Length: 189
Image 1 (cartoon, one colour):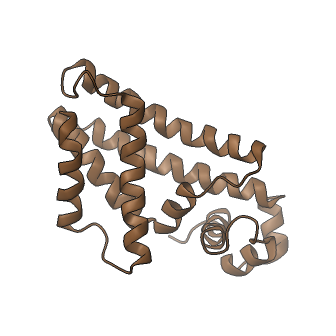
Image 2 (spheres, one colour):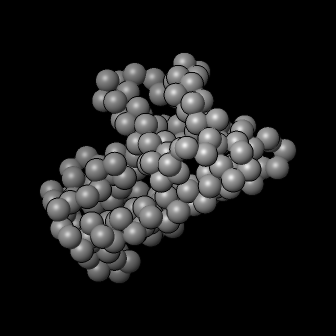
């Protein structure tokens, strides 16, 4: 099934923002990358900022959806769920490298836009912290671990691993990657 025009535009915008950065991306560049007429672009999104926030929100919602699916898999032990969440982050970021780059570099210096992006990412962090707090209360995560720091560290650890490998043109999401990241998290149990 072909993506809707709105999704086609969002995909082109994601590529443009990741390659050019927010300031250098123009609506013309987005229309070109999305392969749509400028009128079609403006029909769906009146400003670059509206489109940028839509792309971020769509990406964060996808990540939350995948995390929730793993955490709600009752066939796995709670410890396996959190390890599989790590694997899911690695898979998600490796399959969505432009989004990974954008999420890790989304802050632009514009206070209002940065707060909006922060609020969108806040939904992800609230979801992760809620799952991790539940695991901590059940004794699977050590009591002396700060959950907010743990959620931030997981996001950054996996995201920057993927980015570095992308820039170095190395394969991402290998068995060695998973094992190394899992080992780093093992201290929380």
